Length: 107
Image (tube, rainbow, N blue to C red; front, top):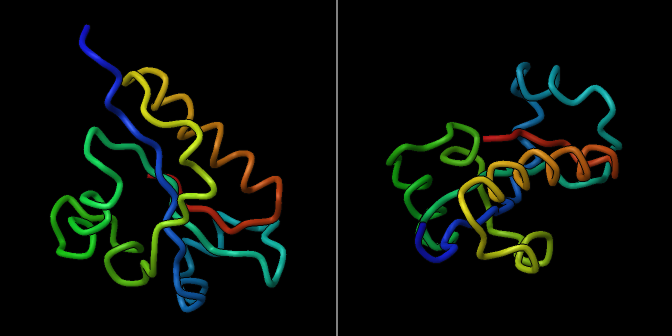
């Protein structure tokens, strides 16, 4: 099975992502003033994955266009983990952040 090497990560998005109708529709309970973020999972180091998003390599368009920085305080404690754990944690983390009023796009 190998060593756990998957990671969840959170990218802060520029507030201008709120102008994207799909993002707004996905976040009807966003609390103004709370961060807008992308939550993803990867087998790479989150820094490398973020750089790939920004370079347009297997990129999420919101991260490529509006990604500002990683927010390791929201995810570091969970990493690394197995693939199945990371898949579950990506969903759980996105749900938890939405409940906290964040605007979230999940990868």
